[in-house]
Image (cartoon, rainbow, N blue to C red; front, side, top):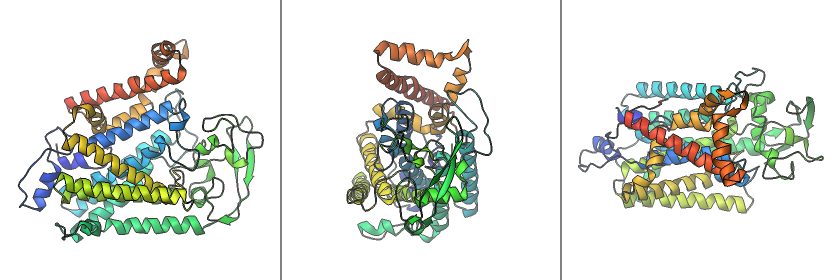
Length: 470
């Protein structure tokens, strides 16, 4: 199977185990390099790790709210998922486009993949699917959600891949002497443009008063939010939310934002709970965590990923690669922490702030380096096979497990009552009742009945050569 397809965008990862390696790709550009090594397994393991964390925080976050998304400022385990996805998408783009010589062919492939991701994103997260608990399907078009995880990945992938495609011929095939020559790539200019657009808009756009109707309560009620300001980074009056309300419409945003778990809204924070009697009206307001302006900032995560891919291509030695990756990773990680703790720019996933970009991209680079050291340098591949298998069929596990489609299918076969299904029986009787703890039982259910189960399924599919490509 063509290795280009294997190395492209994060969800499209099929291969037969004998594809060309990164070093073989480099050899096509630099014939003087003779050494051939096996492909880099870290790509699949990192992608699989991201999917595993997503399933864990989505399905166990209710029992363990401290791993769920931060209600506003700050960063939890769940907040690493999106930037880790975009990071590995960028790495894959740098490698995949090396094998497509014609710009026109590359652009067609990029546009087609972007459209596929947008379609699946709207279908799975636009409101049409109510999986896994609700067995009904359909969405009122007045309230369809246009944004989501796959839609953000599609936008970042499209922009970053097009920049990479059109600038490939402008870059030299070999680096100039010096450790910093790897930073001369043109994608950094695209990242800088995204940064300027985001920062200027966030800090200077005037946000007027706005209103919304709360449809989640028993009786629909209209609320008005008093703003009239610029540069606000709080939940109510930030430019990120204002742009989405103007572009998509307030009724098309995510109706259950994470700020409902904040201390200003509920005494149960950081867990979900009833609203305080004097809770501000914005606690009930919709907000889009994968909106337009924040997705422009997210382009930086993909750009940093492409840089790591370029390092993988141009540096042949393990120590050289690790030196480049770890140095940049720790620098970005430190910048993010400094911006946050000096209160200059708080780490905030909902706004996709600059400090959040640096902090999570640095963490991604460090984790990627550690996995590379363990799997590809020290050859400790066996303990990470489950992650590799999931990474090879990431779209399958994302749809079936993270989006609950398979669980909804099983729940559709119930006895007398929809709650009396095989999925609920296993969770309650095999895990929760056995351990006499709903929290621990839920965690073990997610680990074994979801993550391990789908890891084994992905491994079987890999052995059969079956992959879900986008």
